[in-house]
Image 1 (cartoon, one colour):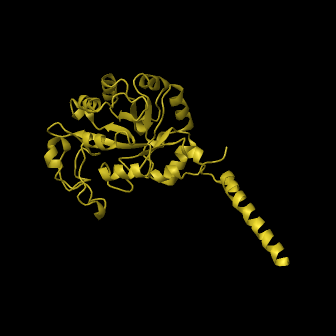
Image 2 (cartoon, one colour):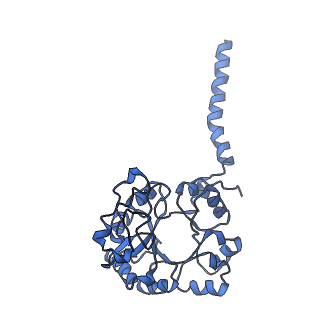
Image 3 (cartoon, one colour):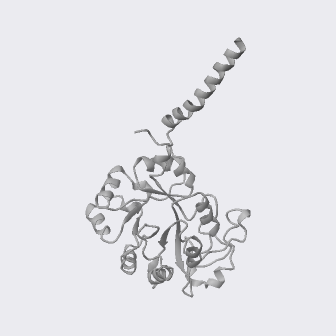
Length: 284
C-alpha cells in the first residue's frame, strides 16, 4: 500500500515538473525568441566567419543559418562584368594578383577564392553579381554594396539592368537594399531604381554627423549604416527621427553584438550570425 502511495506522489511530482520548468525558463531566459526576431541579422560578405568571404559558400552558410540578409561587395572587371570582391585587388582572397579592374572575368574565374580561408574550400570561385542574384533571389534578402563606384563608370546602370531583367527592381518588402560609401553614387542609383531602398555607409569620420546631413541623406536613402564604433543612443534616435533605419557594421564578437542590440539599432551586420541570434536580452 505504501509503495502505491509513494509511486503516486512521484508521478504527480514528475507531471508538475514537466509543466512548470519550461514556464520558469521562459520567464527567466534572457534570450526570448520575440526579442531576437526584432533584430535584423545581416551576414557580412556572407557568413564570413565560417566560410571565405564573398563566395557562394559564405552566402549558402548565411542562408543555412537563416539570416535576414546576405551582404556582398560589387566591383567591375576590365571587360565590364560585375564580380563580388571586397578589395580593389584579388590578392588577399584569391591565389591571383592584380586589380579587379585590370583583369577580365575569364581571368578572375581561374583563381581559387577559398583555399586562403581553409582547405575545405579549395576550388571556390569568385562569383559574379548575376550568378548570385540567380541563386539567392527570393530566398534571402540581399544587401548590395557598390565598392568604389567612382572607379567603374556605368556600374550603377549595370546593377540596375541586372535587377530589372529579373524583375527585382520593385522591392517593396525591402528584400533588396543597395548601399555605398559613395553617397553621390547612391543618389544616381536611387534615380535608376526609385523603388529599391538605398543606404549610405559612414566610416568613423562621420561620428559628428549633423541633423542637417541626416535630413539630406533621408531624401534619397532609407538607411544610415555606420561603423559600429560611432553608434550611440543619441545617433540611433536622430536617425530614426528623420525616418531612416540603422544597420551598423561590422560585429565580430558576441560582446559587440550585445552592445549594438542594447543601443536599439535596427539590424547588425556581422561575420558571425549566431552572435545576433544568441545575444543576452535584458528583460524589460
